[in-house]
Image (cartoon, rainbow, N blue to C red; front, side, top):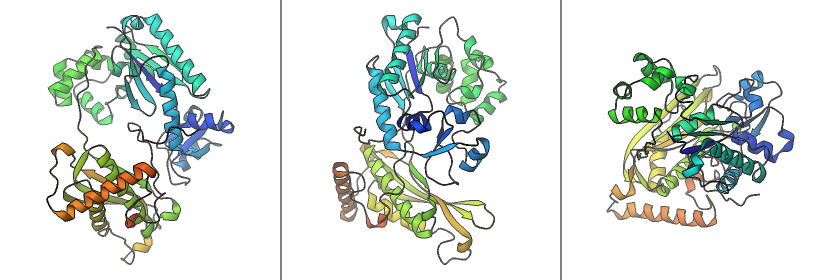
Length: 419
C-alpha cells in the first residue's frame, strides 16, 4: 500500500486570509460573516474562536455569547480567491497539483521515490514552508499523506492546525480506529444511522466490514465495493458525476428586508444562476423560487417555495419571466392580509432537471431564439467589461446586491491580480 497522494488542507482559510491582511486581527478570536447583521451566521472562524465553540453556521448572537470579545469581519471573497491562487502557485513550486478539490483543499500525486515516507515527509515540509514564505506567515495548512485521496484527506484532518500525518502500512488500519464514523467524508448522520442498523458502530467495524455488507448499506453494489477498496488503500478512480442543480440564495441585509428589496435581490440571483448555467454548459427543465419570512411578533420563520416546469432553456429572459410568475404567488405580499406581520429575510432560486447542452434541443420558435440572442449579448459584454455591466430591467438597482460568494467546491473567476 504505497503512499500515492499528498492532501493539503488550509487551516481556517477565510479567517487566516483576514488575519494575514489585517495584523490587528491576529491573536484575537475572529469569525468571518457574510453580511454585517446580528441575524446572520458565521461562515468561518479562527482556531482561537473555535476553542470557545464557534463554528461554521453559529449565529452571530450565539458566537458573542460563547466567545466574549470575538471580532467579526465581513467576508471578502475576491481576496480569498486571490490568496487561493497564491497558495496554488506556492505548492506547484514544490510539487505539481493533480486536483484542486476546493478553495482550501488540493491533492498532489506522489511518484517514484517520493512515495518513501522520509522523502514524502520532507516534501510536505517544503510545501508548508513555500506557503509560509510566499503567501504569508498566517497561512498554515495541515497535510495528510496516504495511499488514496480519501485516506490522505482523513490523515490531514487528524492533526489540526498545522499538522502532518502519514498513513503508512505500519499504521493502517489501526490509526483510523480512533476516529468517529462521521469523520469519513460522505458519512453524515443519516449514513451513520444506516451503518448502525447493520451493526457498525466503530471505525474498526467499518474497516472490517465485507464488500457485501457495505453494498447493502449504501444500496449499491458499485458504491459498496468502492468503499471496501478505498478503506483498504486501493487507488480507485473517481466515477464521473452529472450536475443536478444550479442554485443561489442570499440572506437579505436589513435595508432590503422589504417586498421590493426581496424581489430585486431574487432577480439578481436569477441572473447569476442563468449565467452560471450557460457557463457550465447545461439547460434546465424546472425553476423554483423561495423565501423565508420572519414574524415580527413571534420571531418565528416560515419558509415558502414555488416550483414550475419549463421547456428546456438556459436564457435569462425566460428564467426571469418564470421566476416573476412564481414570486407573484408568494404569501404576505404587499397589501395581502397579515403582510405587516411578516418580513422577507432570505430569498433563493434553484434551476433543476438539468441536461448537458449537447443533449438539449433548441427551440424552433423565433421568440425563444431572441432570448438566446439576448443572453449571448449579456455574457459577451459582462465577460469583457465586468460582471453585471449589462442586465435586464428586473434587476435594476440591485447590481451590487448578493455579491458572488465562494462555494467551497467552485472557485469564481475573479481577477487574480488584486494585491
